[in-house]
Amino acid sequence: MKKVYFLLILSLFIFVTETAAQKNRLIGDIQGEKNTSPYNGESVRVSGIVTARTRTGFFLQTPDDKVDANPNTSEGVFVYTKSEPPGEATIGNAVTLTGTVTEFTPKADPESLPITEISFFKGKDFITVDSKGNALPKPIVLTIDDFKPNKIDELEKYEGMRVTVAEMTVVAPTGGRVDEKTGSADSDGTFYGVVKGVPRPFREPGFDVYDYIMMSDKDKDKMKKETPKIALFDHNPERLRVESTAQLGAQPIDVTTFTEIKNLTGVVNYSYRAYSILVDADSKPIVSNLWKAAPLPPPTERQFSIASANLERFFDDADDPSNPNEPIITSEGFERRLKKVSLAVREYLQTPDVLAVVEMESLPVLKKLAERINKDAEASGKPNPKYEAYLVEGNDFGGIDSGFLVKSTRVEVLETKQFGKDEKFENPVSKNEAFLNDRPPFLLRAAIKDPKTGQPFEFAVIVNHLKSLRGYNDDKEAPFVRTKKKLQAEFLAKYVNERLKANPNERLALVGDFNAFQFNDGITDVVNTIKGTPAAKDAVLYPSDDLVNPDLIDLVDLIKPAQMYSYSFDGNAQVLDHFLVTPALKTRIAGFGYARVNADFPEAYRNDPNRVERFSDHDSEVAYFTLDGK
Image 1 (cartoon, rainbow, N blue to C red):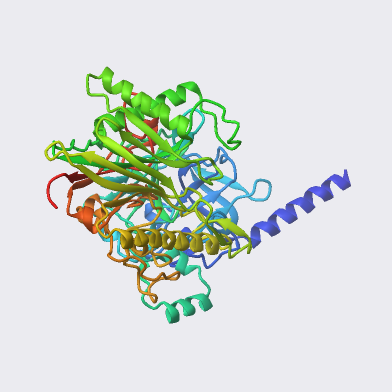
Image 2 (cartoon, one colour):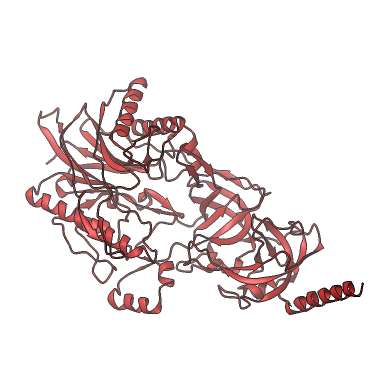
């Protein structure tokens, strides 16, 4: 019995000693005025009202009558429990708990700003309920004044606190998880918005500020010395990431771009380089003005059209022994994709005379798509375009290639040629040789017979799918990715220049997914290098010479700024799909635009075979040219 008493007294002594070491701290003091807590790494005891519960923790906030007088310190904090939080952490409960102050940065994105948290370890820390059924702290109303250019941490003062947006405009649709084999998607409930009145965020020229922040002082000094004219892109801190399913029990909100939302309330978190609102599970925001797909107009009698579409890994339901890395799609999934793309080509791209495609599995699969479009056109009572398919296999490890669908009722194919397949370069990381072009450029030379003159109107199109941006800012992969993108652009520029030397009047278009912006991003200047207008050497890390004369024209530069996007990434609208033309073809331009069928719509729309939206993640581009003129 004495031994039992001794162990009991010893355990009480240890508990009292540990508790005494944990000092009482106010949430505002723990958060402090900076990105990192002044008590980082310390064991603390803290009190507050539970305001939200997630799968890995809960949010704690100071009651309204106990907040400090400092508006620059947040009164909320996330308590990390690793798994679903304990029952004591019920919303509305006032609790006291112990834990360790930590600064969390995702391993997948070490350049992200840190989040101040309290780590709660079961068995080590304790939580007690002081009272139940308390009113939640009144949410802060976010306004335009809370967002300032180049202030990426402006909402740090609200981190972990309840906020509300009276009126929000969605700027990027609800995302989701795509099951490639079934061609279906599950909503993840996450979208991006801005306080109403704030312009839509677009990717802007320059080096990403987050990547700059994480550079060493030595690298920053080198950049300032060697490339002083590199601009910095602030990543558009006015974006709000909205996570509608983050709180336990919440349901996804599936919205399109331009949707209007009123009375959106939740707690502030930080993820994916943006401040997030985790929507209250019991809130009922008012959602209105969901957008609809917008078709482009058909060409007139004296016009012809050239289009480009990224079909996002378009595979079929057959096993191709020559491609061990292919996904085999279910029959239902393949049928859904065929139906959606056919609808898009016929009703929204208006059956272009030439359709360049990227991310297509093979020629047999492209032929299946052509047959489906032709069949559906006849079934709908419209003329059969009699599309014919052209594709040559490339080097892509995943088995995707570039090709063409050509309307044989109007267009005569004179030549098709893939080039650059065997071109190699030295990987600056491994020092081994690697293919320069995973998806080599593919040339189509064609003619349309002018019914007015009886003469053929000749033109050429090169479809491109350049190296993606994946690994562009990764410490290990960046030298390889950046070098490859620079060399791909220079290879293409040199090829175009040689063609123009041989035929200065060639009507040539370069289309497809360039995986680059219409401006210098501070690292490479891919599109402008291909155009013949590369950035100055002191304004880009991987500069290129001027390799093209005369310069090409990017049709993107001719449309309204609000329409300059074909893709949405982390809430920023951006152009990845370009349409470059030679001067001889520029004189025939009659129009250009993107069919708004994908980038502005939620992933959940992918599941509906009767609607065109979300057959891919890129919007498709169409250019119109006149047969009249010189």
